[in-house]
Amino acid sequence: MKLRAARLTQIAVPLRAPLATAHGRIHTREGVLLELEAHGGARGFGEALPLAGFDLESPTHARAALADAARQLVGSEIDSADAGLGAAARDLARAPAARAALDAALRDLEAREIGTSLAASLGANARARVPTALLLGAEHADGAAAEARRAVAAGFRVLKLKLGTNAFDADRARVAAVREAIGNEVALRVDANGAWSEATAAAHLEALASLDVELVEQPLASEALEALARLRRASPVPLAADESVRDVASAERVLRFEAADVLVVKPAAVGGLGSALSIARRAREAQVEVLVTTFLDTAIGRAGALHLAAALPPGRHAAGLATGSLLADDLAPGPVPKSGAIALPSDNGLGFSPDPAALTRLTRGETLEVCA
Ligand SMILES: [Mg+2]
Image 1 (cartoon, protein in one colour):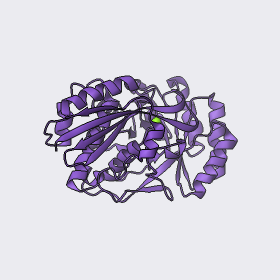
Image 2 (cartoon, helix red, strand yellow):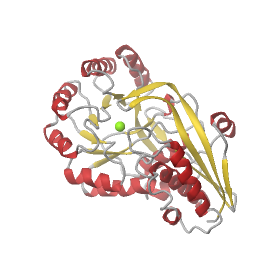
Image 3 (cartoon, rainbow, N blue to C red):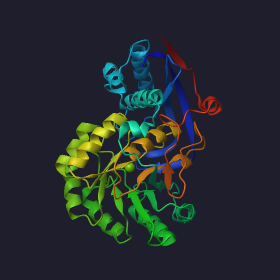
Image 4 (cartoon, rainbow, N blue to C red):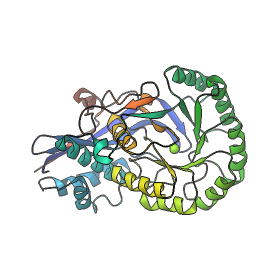
């Protein structure tokens, strides 16, 4: 494929309500939408919306790196998405969010030109529907219980809560309130985002096990792999590594330390769909499950993660792709979960393109266009 143009648009997407995580309170998702246009007119999309706590570059750095990469690629013949990423590797070396954006846009464009879905281009037996957990945003026990009841009524079978922003007693009370509200048939997972110390984590895990929590994400800081491995050996609850998985090398370290039962893989955090596939392959060799999740991404980022999850063999734990309802606005109207799962779109590539009116609403600042 030959690129005729690349467009970089700065966007800011407000959340419906601020989301409290152990890394801080998130009000708005800011970053860059990348649009690649081929000579035949086909277009591919990717986004870089770096989130705090994952050692990612700033939105400004992501935009600059993507501009450099675009100048490198536009006008030249690109044999494949991987070849395009290789050619821009130097520009993106310290910008994993930008790399993920270029990776998605190239793969989207490539799949659209071939006439296949992105999922089919990532794996041979893509699933048509991907079961997903729903992230509950409410900070207090009553609100979380009410939100959980609505989620179960909407068909979700797996719910997730963020912990670590309050004293543990308050967190436990919120988990207990949700468990009480949803009964024993619906799974509940929690995410500490690295907030606990090794000294307190074991007791927290015991308390959560008594509330039938299915999975605890990132109980300890991302670098504490030896401690995480010790904690896991005695844990009554499966542990997932999330912030510890930042690229292929860090995922391999987690596997080598046997520090997690599950690897959480966010294409947006690990440098893109290609890296995520490599991590999934290594995890499979180590017989560790991979769980694909989104990052409070827009519809474009969520669609990429959906295709990746669909392309991977199903695991015991549902993916984490239902974060769109936390946004107050979005680039496109889907993908939307129905009855606890998200269906793959029928169109080629990502299956979604930004809605022009939505893009105008969410654009901040000038769009940079690189033409051949
Ligand atoms: Mg997490």
